[in-house]
Length: 267
Image (cartoon, rainbow, N blue to C red; front, side, top):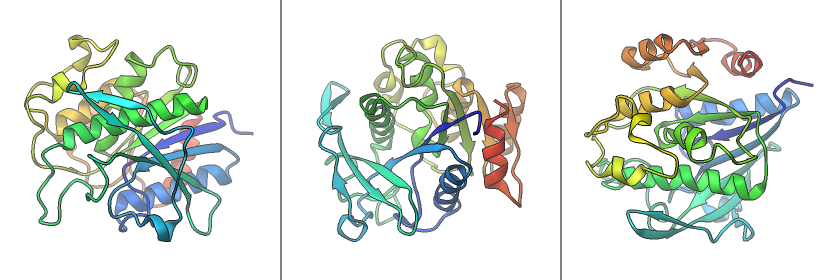
């Protein structure tokens, strides 16, 4: 049996629920490889408006839904749905909310404009996943985050959820991809993302305006290991990851998924 027996995947896109991209295909293949290697897995992604609930047979998990997540003094209801990836034994949990995800696309709208509230959508998704896992009472050895929508997870686990049994002994892996958004978050983002246990000193280089590079660096600061998931990662982030002294897995053209699975046991 593998040394790291339980792996939690937190991602922003998985094929075939969304269009095929480097990230959605990686997040489709990696959980299957890890599961076939004998590990137990859990997988989370946002329930984007493009995810066809009827075709993919999504149904609500009532026992996990109903939590209210407060962002900027406003309550937002957390809805959890679940479905299985066709032709696999992989079950995916979807984080949903009427304001942030229902009938809305991913980072950009139909005209290609980045949503003004992507910052709040990020906060809601990351906190929503962690609250759901806490309610599941599922303990993970490895938590592997993919995509800029998961960038706050390492910080929240290390500071806000550090005493939760589900996360106390977990090692966090963060996968780096090419730049995923161009427009900086609103200047209110840092104030809105602050949570119990998070201090200003925990934010490192992150100052307003928060762009993709700063958000990624924050994730690197609080993660335990880094993966270069695609060849187009910004050189500044690769250098920052290497300078951190943390375990770093460079991009590999062949057998990348198995290399990542093996990488878990070195952390």
